[in-house]
Length: 320
Image (cartoon, rainbow, N blue to C red):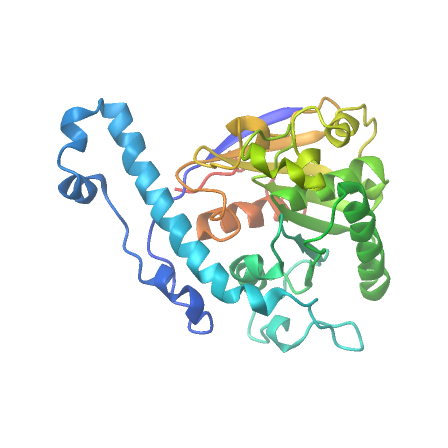
């Protein structure tokens, strides 16, 4: 089943995060309007058709945001190279500890965050904080090696990591959020390695479910070849998956330059309970960072909790 919703985040200023000085430029970044950009580019509105000019403005906004996020992420990258530390008792460290002033929340499964190609857990620093501030008390990240050459091997590693989390926390199931390649690894675990027994909801962000043709010179890397349309791994994922118990939510962006074609980030499989959410105006790197996308992710994860609305009852995953 393929259901598409639209998420159109406003490019408002980011909230100041004093502990994330590496991303402070995002906090100070002003919201750009078409009129302000047209003053910088006076010929844009005159020489281009209205729709094309509007697209150019959106593209400039998204590109500026991508550059700011990339600069901040490069500064944070060393902090995420090692696996995260856990206390001996298996409880979160102080940074993830629940706020004693927060009202009690329904019991929620742990959330596992899985990064993309040649990345690490630092890409989720803002999403992790957003989830924690809204009641998610058990959030864990998995780093897989940048030298990983096989999606199947990475999926097996994810499975062992999830089993360890379930044993340590006493939870029967977990939620998973995967960015880019991370979403493909998690999907392989769910569909091909029996992970639907453990994964309640899988949220993918800019994941090439049908393969991407971008950067053909990168084919020298085996895992890049596995992300090409028609690869054996993607062929495996297209096979029947009757009775899959995991709910899928795929976020895809209309300005994601790493997805070619753009809708390759949509989940389209007759046996999967899948909802696709179109995000307007942000690029690939912004998907795990932008607060409007984080709000959509929280709603996707909360949809099955007792006493909460489902996505359909709430009118879809949209942000004004």
